[in-house]
Amino acid sequence: MSERTLVLVKPDGVKRGLVGDVLARVERKGLTIVAMELRTLDADTAKAHYAEHAEKPFFGELVDFITSGPLVAMVLEGHRAIEAFRTLAGATDPVKATPGTIRGDHALQIGENVVHGSDSPESAAREIKIFFPDRF
Ligand code: RTP
Ligand code: MG
View 1 (spheres, helix red, strand yellow):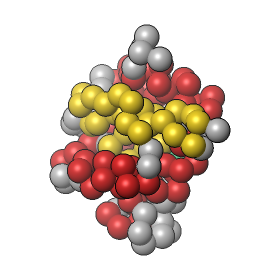
View 2 (tube, helix red, strand yellow):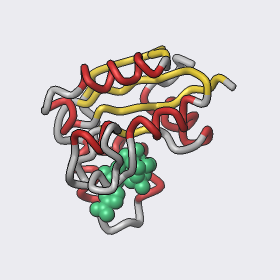
View 3 (cartoon, helix red, strand yellow):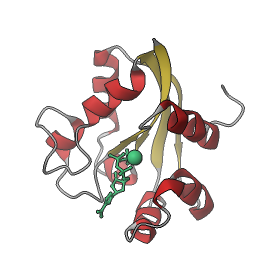
View 4 (cartoon, protein in one colour):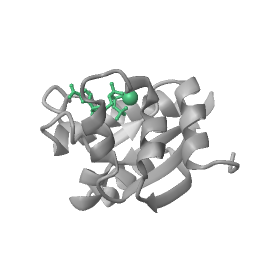
């Protein structure tokens, strides 16, 4: 079942020079990059992207962080791409993320966990529309 997912290399990942590492893992896994862009989010776009977390205590920090510098947004396509990328990313809390995953290898703090990947087909469709309107 081929599907699409929206993936971000977050500002911490771009600052730390981890874009190449993430792309290498994505390509090695066999997922296809069908769109990609370097951009800095404005607050409104960030709030739209993280709308599901609007009531959480960390929402303000989340928006500040994701707008703090350039990120790389991409759309990946492939067999069960949503789950495949989330497996590559590892657990949200990098301390719990298995070594060998992106977060398990590169991160320690939950707020700076290098990558985002859509968590369901509904989220993927919504997020792809935010980052790449009219492209798909
Ligand atoms: P993402 O959306 O970034 O792919 O991460 P996720 O699905 O694994 O985690 P999610 O629950 O959607 O949370 C979104 C991002 O919010 C930050 N977070 N901070 N301070 C906290 O307790 C806390 N909890 C979550 C993380 O950076 C997480 O990636
Ligand atoms: Mg999420």
